[in-house]
Length: 483
Image (cartoon, rainbow, N blue to C red):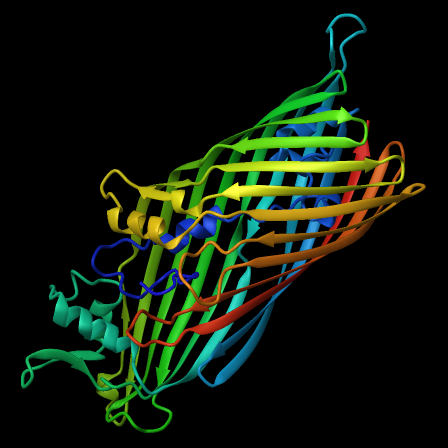
């Protein structure tokens, strides 16, 4: 198959009534850790630093560096702009979202002197960290003189005959009922009014939702040299997608068809479980070394709900105009996302500042789908062949000016695809300020992120993809109280 990018549909869903694809597994496997403004402001490179609630989602050992109990909460409004380049046309859309980066409590328990040996303190934390945001909108349009979505349908029927509409209830069946494709007795094949393309194509896609993880962490401090921790995470997936694909006979080159529309709606909900463990070692006061391991995330209760509407409009033949609704599809399945290993290093420059960096290893080919009634062999093979292992790099720095802090950071999330072409690399740059006193702190951060993808309207030989460029601006505001 050509490059998957995030084409959730190849629009040939009819072989079986499932919509789960390799791209879905990748969507939920890529984690762009959000959280507190301080965490994001230093690029998310907090694995060796600790003492920040969002750091517990990366390296749970960070809980051992808390010296007291605290509460923190972050609001993170964002604007995402998407530029699409398809054939000769360019379009730009923007969408705003107001989300929550984190909310969490940390409680510190210090044993009485002489009662716990080298253990300086034990800490417990619980709360929520955001791991991904799916709020996006884009519009693709352009004249295609080579193919049509209807080519995909007729090729499918001619190469793999099936009963219509029962074997193809969500796309080919409704298109047949709407007279967009038909049986030609002369050639004894299925065909359409535009077998050679010639329509003005467009697609509008609106997605929203998030992955939020509820974390329970515990850990401690041994002699101010070794810090340890474990996190039990329960991520919650909410993903919604609404799309409208259309073909318009703008040049009057198609004999009978005026226009067609394919509207698609998907809802995905899931709950998972992950275990994370980590340590931070401080050989000297100026150096901290961190290591964390994240188990695969097991989603045992994934559920998809989807349906479509196909509409056709013809010239001077209003009796043939049709709007055909598909049945509703519902399916429960299981998903596993890859394990992670994170190594981190931080240098503490006295009372003046710090520099930190970390490397995250993740192999996206380890994702997997399964269910009690279907093995997903083809999809799982596609995951193994289409995705690769590499890693993500995050760096950051923070400097102190009395009660104030100044921060900057950057992130590089590597290309997960094995095929050539425009890759899926994501870049982030962040900067922020903070104010900290004994019982209160407030932080403000701006983060810029950009990535690209190739998006195919459908899977067809010679199909030219749209180049989609995603640019996100996020402002995070955190307040915290120590007690």
